[in-house]
Image (tube, rainbow, N blue to C red; front, side, top):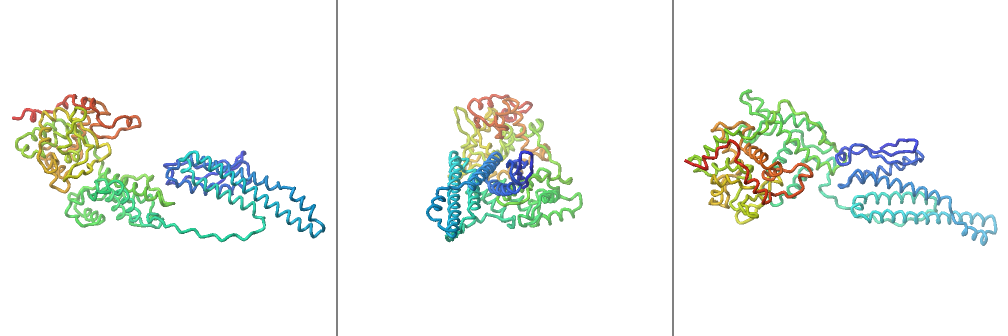
Length: 558
């Protein structure tokens, strides 16, 4: 906080704390105080700084509301000061004359009368001050009451005005003869929430509360963590191990760089490597580094390291929101370690590779394992993710406005109970149009007639603890056997890229996003229906087959 003077008077300036800059902006808050003395400017600056400190913690506070509130408070202080100065030089003379005429008969009496006059004048002045204070509070309260939202946001400002006016009133009446004050009853102590963390709280304690609160809000009945929650837990545990479990005030932004530098030496898929089983992160890194260069396991890629950093920053932002004076680790720009494996962009699966795959899938040998044989075809023609396909149920094929579609907005029906469908994002819950090729190739007939527990179309994978992971491994091994797999670039998920290109070229970006469950970009794109309507389903059904792809192994089996 500091003051600076211009020809027009003093200006109060207070910087915005780092943790609020994303919401309130980085430029300081400035309030004009007008032409007043330096001493009075310092006094008002202290009041404004206290008001800003209290108001800035409000979750819904904006820069505009904060500036307006402080400006109003400064104006109210100035008005009250002017009124008090006026009252200071104004007092009623009628009462004084009455005393002089009826009671003054000697010098001693005159002295007593003088004391009575001064006391009476102070009392009158105090009464006028109190009247002005009440009127001020009524004006502020009435203005705020007109807008419930403004009242909620500026409640702290109102309370500050009460305190400021009270202090002015006490100052104005300090010369009045002292009267013994009534005993003040101590306010009952309010029990603090256990999550009211302090700078001395350990990160493990504060972070655990954040993760538990998130899981309770999103998955209150789900005992098994989702994949994203698993990533949060893994990243958080890794940060505590690498940087240490310390009090919140210990952590510096540069610790994010230390974390990233260490992660670049961590072997990927370490939990699945027998040699690293039971080892800590540091022990794993040390053991991998001691192996000959040609035997070392490849380490984490840039995308994985970035994901870990993002999850930790996410947790830290929630922890620091309720604890003052913590460092802003979210804004720190981490340099990606040179040892980190470069990110690889996935590509649509090459058409020749698609043809090799579909030809092999349609063979009698593979058709004896329909849970495996139908996956590539379904992935290519629907654009669905692996997990969406694996959790597909017979009852998901429904009629909507005269068209049969795949309804991924429905819950799963397992053992007679409705279970929330596991999806990657909110937009994943969608309608998927069924292209005629899926019928021509026989997939729809198979899916609707499959006999399996709970009606899962790809039920074989549900014999494992992690059905999508089991399916992913089978597809990986299959593609490797056909020599069409390329690490990260040409994988099963590449079929989704192929499908997106196919839909985009024929029905445009919006329908392609709806079909594939991708989020719309921009405010304008988010207006309108989020699910495919009957006309849009027909548009998807009418598009020509993917160029160059040979479906005859399914449509004309030998």
